[in-house]
Length: 411
Image (cartoon, rainbow, N blue to C red):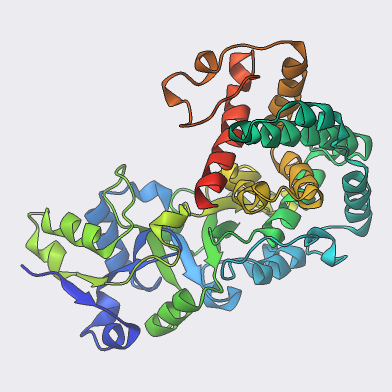
């Protein structure tokens, strides 16, 4: 049986019984399966099609909080988070120089925290690596300069953040982390979606929230997704177009092949495939959305009777926060911007920064062979003459190396 396909929103809107269909559509990064959130029978068919665990729930795509007001308790969302949702999920744009310092107010970020952050950034030093930079002359080894300077900037960033009481440690841990995540979310500009856990109403259908007391919602300002949602006449569910546990699909052709491989003809009849590429093509390597829970403790405590209450913080793809932004500045190596990104990265991912900080000490203490660190996964063309000497620190250095290699390939 031939799978139904459309190539534009006008054709989609003209589809017979559209609201009773499952639509496979391109998102920022992968193809999703969806329908309007009030079509519970269709949602159940999506679960069956994907063989998905009903306890997981769904991501909801909407253009505003008003579109999810029937399932989300808006009274439990702090005003700062409501404001933040207006700032995020806009079309991809470059991370520009001094963008952090271009305004003095961000949702959920106090004046005192922001001022301390600006002071910390202003005090970050990179001079420690100047001697090493002068000692390396071969053009082929220029990446060593970038790697080492990033590490030294992270070392200084950690010292300054600690001195200004910005780190997510001690009594102020969650408050500091909350403010850092609000700021980083507002600055996020890579095209990768930000999905937020919002408080579910008591009568929110369980199929939408799964076993949880929250609903995963992405308020999008991407023009195509906004038009798609409006075509449905309201918020839609979104889950990756694949069988549960399989790799996500990035093209309409892959989705069609998946459907054609099914022996269930009824299943095939229920799906319409939107035959257009994902918003940010596969070559840009935009991953599926980052999942965050920024709800305050007092809101979370009121949700315990509804279902499982997720932990606070970044719950999925934390490694993608700010790293893609670093790629935009790696080749030019703008010290001002790198310092901004370095201190922000450590505020939302202390483990990564502590590993990087410790790696600087190891660089100063000794050397080991790069094969001992990278093994079979050594990045092609990477010639490091100084690397980590403790296995638990390797991921931090690998990540910095990966960012450089991606930036180098783009450049």
